[in-house]
Length: 301
Image 1 (cartoon, helix red, strand yellow):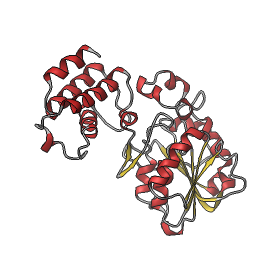
Image 2 (image 1 turned 180 degrees about the vertical axis):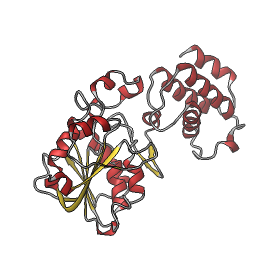
Image 3 (image 1 turned 45 degrees about the vertical axis):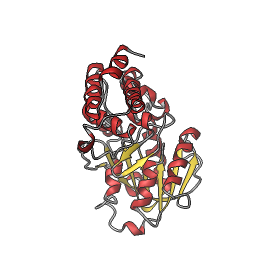
Image 4 (image 1 turned 135 degrees about the vertical axis):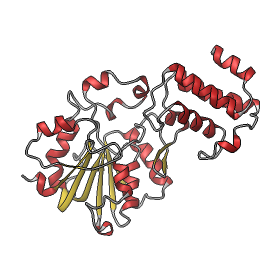
């Protein structure tokens, strides 16, 4: 038990006290926030509210509520775990959000944070004009199953295949698929990308594959070291998985099928490696550098 913890148990009483304490601890420890929250205050508010089983969007009414001794210990314990072990908040609460959707997560999968989720919210318009005509979707590197689940909601008549190399990740995905009652439409497949898909073709292939280059992997903040290494790094330049996807995607797309892939900060490297591919870069909240689209015909050149 740290000195911070011992002193806090004696001095803190209310939600407001715990929130202030958490913000101070997080800032002092110089935590990294890249798994859902933007700063120390947002993360502190989330962890305090979640631990106290309070609505996540209503902090104000509870600020001056006095905590029981048990509640105080629970709140301080999760604050100390976040600081001392640098565990991402999502792994502490086993909960991550993409828009209005929440997913179970643990250290078998990366914490969901894909820009593709934003695009699925709009049913990939204007690139897909008739969402109800999408019959088949493939989500490569599905991890927790989050994008497969979002795709199933975006395209209500589609069968969705969700592929991952990791059986541990697929166990998490299975739980999330069941939580959303999508077992009949989302099919989990253990495969190294396309390896076990035979001749199956899809109207839409989406992927948020590993894309961190070796130099960046070596410099990752400690928080990221809790995530599966397999889901982060992808060779020297971060493009190993993307190269395989580009090599084989055409044979798994229907005639009018499209491919959408997230590649992090690798746009310049990717375009230099494939100067003849007419990438369409899709706009997301962070800009047009992170997600590309290609039609099947583009990949046949």
